[in-house]
Length: 149
Image 1: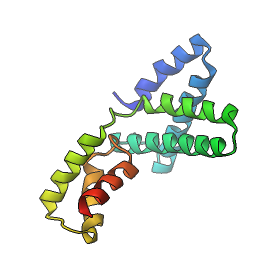
Image 2 (image 1 turned 90 degrees about the vertical axis):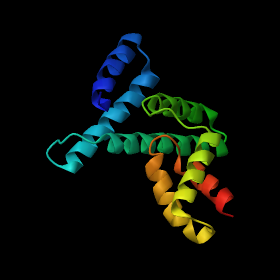
Image 3 (image 1 turned 60 degrees about the vertical axis):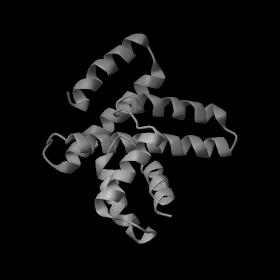
């Protein structure tokens, strides 16, 4: 089931429940999807990996905004951003735990025969591809650094 097919019933449900916060987050997803489709040309359907990247970008934007608001002691603005990030994250695949990330990174390091920080780029490329949508890049990078250093 594509993201668009999941989005339509969720939008209807949010409208019926008069949940403005959820509705705003879902409309942001729909808007980003439409924009990505038109950029791809001719309204072609996006691949699953493109959809995941899009959702991750939206979640990251919300979290970054919330962090800035928190630094400025504006919890009234930070809380809606964090809530929207949770709504958007619900459409992402199940996130891996730190232990699972460590295990997958160890497997990639063993596969590539990496031994030092010089090999970090190769390991990161392979690990990011293996865990696409299941883990944030910063968490993967932290695991790679700790295992290679």
